[in-house]
Length: 173
Figure 1 (cartoon, rainbow, N blue to C red):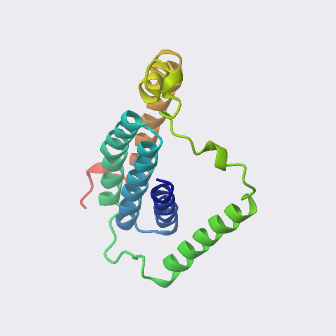
Figure 2 (cartoon, helix red, strand yellow; figure 1 turned 90 degrees about the horizontal axis):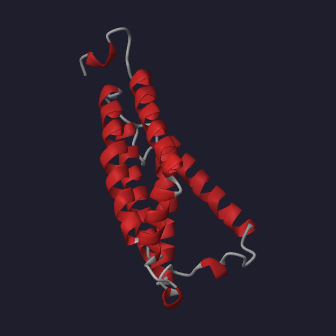
Figure 3 (tube, rainbow, N blue to C red; figure 1 turned 135 degrees about the vertical axis):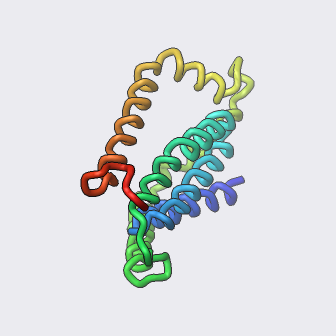
């Protein structure tokens, strides 16, 4: 299980580096799908299967629709891929930065936190992820509403940035 978690974490870091280093929105969308899939796999490994499903559906269903719409408006005839020299150099620099930071902080303080949510099931009445979802809707309702408003604001910002000259989002692609 630890090896699977390590593989998912490595895939998550590589996906984040692919999103951060790629100037073309076409290839960055694949990096976003990779990041969402790997983070959902990490959540499933720790026992949050319901939260993982909700994250995957909301993130890929909502944010990637906006991302695909803005990528269609900002289309390039010859996008740069991961094999080009500036993109691969930047991606290598990001991965080396993550490796250096992880070596700097590798003092053994994190090893005690590798416990799944269901490992202490004899002390709990409910599963960990369902209790967390109920707590999110009861005590964290304000933060949930704030997150919805932030996503709506992000939608308007993306549409304003990709608006074009003066015709708005109805320009020819």
